[in-house]
Length: 139
Image (cartoon, rainbow, N blue to C red; front, side):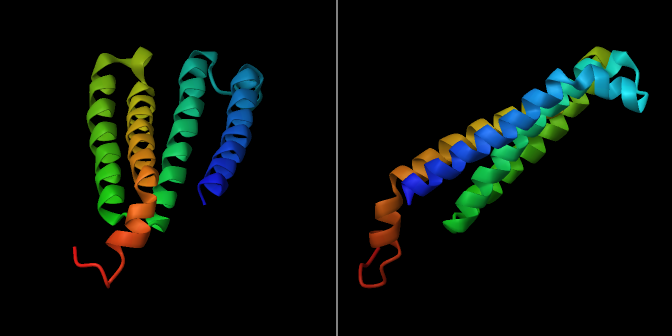
């Protein structure tokens, strides 16, 4: 099961990472083609990086939900909600140069928290599978 997780994570990183790298590289031509100001190039690229971490966060959330770690999933969603709300408000007050950093930082923080939580959960997977959920063993 762990090998299947690692294979899926590797495929995800390669696919999502490739899309983000291509998007970052062709961003100037794309923004010009759709008529968006070049001044928003940095924000667009930052949004692509944030989307990479956000999709990684969602991947890990789905994995934790599969293992029925509802409290962990709820806590991680709360971390993302709080971080996104707070950091977006802060970066909005800092001005145009900082637009997008709130979402990027909140996605990065949530991904890091989910990565740590998933690693902890997978390390304890045999215990959770064979001991904690076994009705013949008293907790």
